[in-house]
Image (cartoon, rainbow, N blue to C red; front, side, top):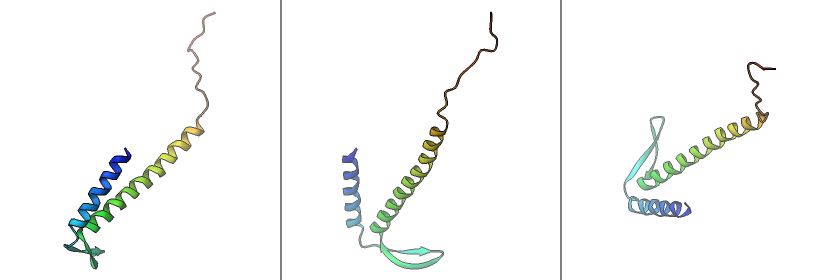
Length: 84
């Protein structure tokens, strides 16, 4: 699994180096702010996506872990009728 992260990082670095020339404008709320290289834009978008996914996993994963700790009481099922 750690090799996959290394390979992905190297591939992103190669993509960044090869796509350095075409500059695209960064547009926020309809206004062009600045121009960034295409590869750098893809790299930043990828990193922001990873951070958002990690943050959501931590947020919702923490909620489920907290709920499972609250309900640690054993469930006891009693029969509907008892024969004597």
